[in-house]
Length: 334
Image 1 (cartoon, rainbow, N blue to C red):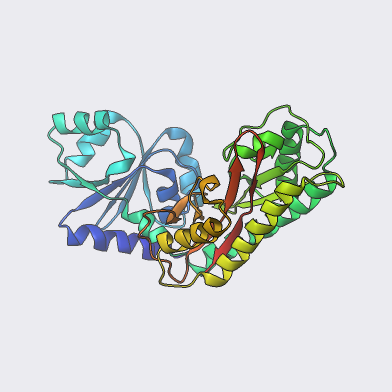
Image 2 (cartoon, rainbow, N blue to C red):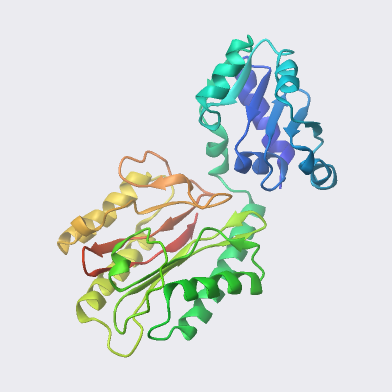
């Protein structure tokens, strides 16, 4: 990973704004810049050095594992404030800090300059090593789904299936799940973000399985819809075929340069022909990388342009209140 190149881009960004330093708190952004996974602290990048203020329990980990030179300092509020006073003003990623933190710094005459999360914009274009990790996570994801599909039995509870997903991810080499798996059976499949319950799988009714893999800090995300037993619900099988056509058409339609909004609208237009667009109640997809939801967004109003190096999902869905739903999710690498 080109951590030093990423840090230099940060320095170029703040230099153009005549800022001597930048504060970064989001663990995902810290990981992107330093390779340090899930560190809680505040990273300070200035024109010549990098400082990390963090609890003592992270210090040896940083010393042993950091691929870039970092000055690690035990976090104490007063010590941190005193450190910041060496700069006339300091930039910070506005979305990462609370108003109370901002207010406390301001009272101590520390001038803070809010900035948009430009690091998330940097993260939208993946390096080759990042893409390789995401693809390996996706391979594990497919193996997990292959095994789960063989194991499904009528009456098997959602929570039990989720437990198997957790186990299989680790069996095949994943660090952990990218998010809590969604196992939605029968009417539960009409809830896009269903929380698993002790409900048994129903014969012939849709069973949505949405799960992702974390491999060394990078994520994958897939969704399948199954019909356990030998008599699938005819109406939902028809919906399934329509969604499969939508997904295949989208995979052919997507190209570099289009916006996330254009791709989403294409799916809506397709479903409208089948009088099903009112049952498609979420964005078509999202970027995947260090976070399972990042840029580009594939949704109404999204102006994010799809570029070479983008990795994102395409996940059309149909959700019929009181009955059930279908969702199919695949990953796209541009």
